[in-house]
Image 1: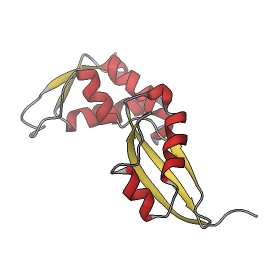
Image 2: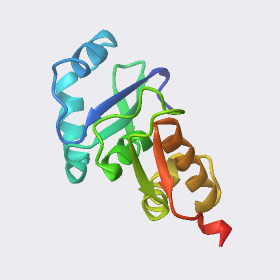
Image 3: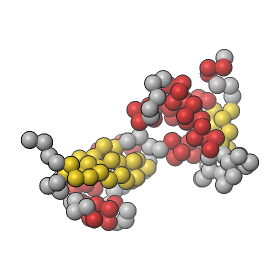
Length: 147
């Protein structure tokens, strides 16, 4: 018989660096989950993405057991890394803080493909480029579909 799902929990944790301190400990403790067990499993499965911010979707079952899925890093984090910026613009429509190339946008879109609701890499690139613009980053060069 399948386990009964009692809820879901979304967290953003740095890869390979989950520990019982906030925000992980209090969020899991409030749901009655084994905090150390999650930390061990997460750190083991995210060892290859050390230090990157990773969204985690935790499925909580009625017997206090859990499963979790590690998603790809958020597009804004990847865009900031690509543009070598600390943060986005406070006024993205007026003040541009950096730029990314279409090649960088394509790399990010290919990594994010499993988590986006896009069928083609080009449509995923348009989504990532829109995120870049809303952060105050300029997308330089000509779009591949305009050639």
